[in-house]
Length: 193
Image (cartoon, rainbow, N blue to C red; front, side, top):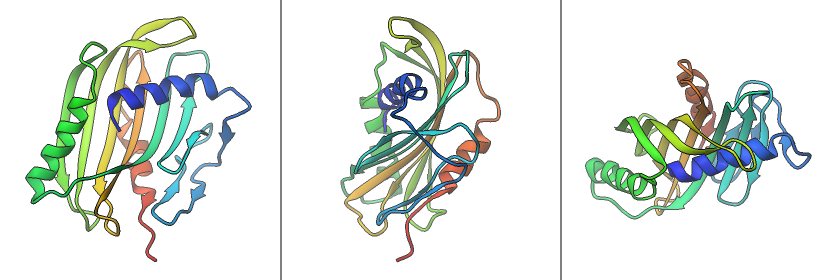
């Protein structure tokens, strides 16, 4: 999941969140699957904004503001890597390659390897300025985009990876974003069977 894809999902969120097409979900609602079990974010007001064979995305828009949240899980092909350092470098290269420097101005970024889940993952956190954030059909503004994510190699399908991301876009930082982000990331797990 790249910054561009997250920004697109955020824009889609802004338009679909109020439409009849977006499906409301309950706090922590479980979406069980053969590759991953995904729990909806643990708060009210979330809707499914995308559900395909490779992406599951939830959106939440704060009424009467340009503030929105997106929680997303996405699958992607993942080449083999020889060690932890190469895995981190691969994720970093993919994120940087797909990030438009014309649109996004990075404020802070962090990549960190973890095997806390028992399989290889990279924590990726970024704060960036989205200089072309679409806030209405024709309107654009500069907004802050915060993303907490976890990129992992699937333990049962090592040729595949998945990313779990939780983002906020608004005029200011959400200083407590790590709390719901970590809860959402923890709520996405590989089924035991």
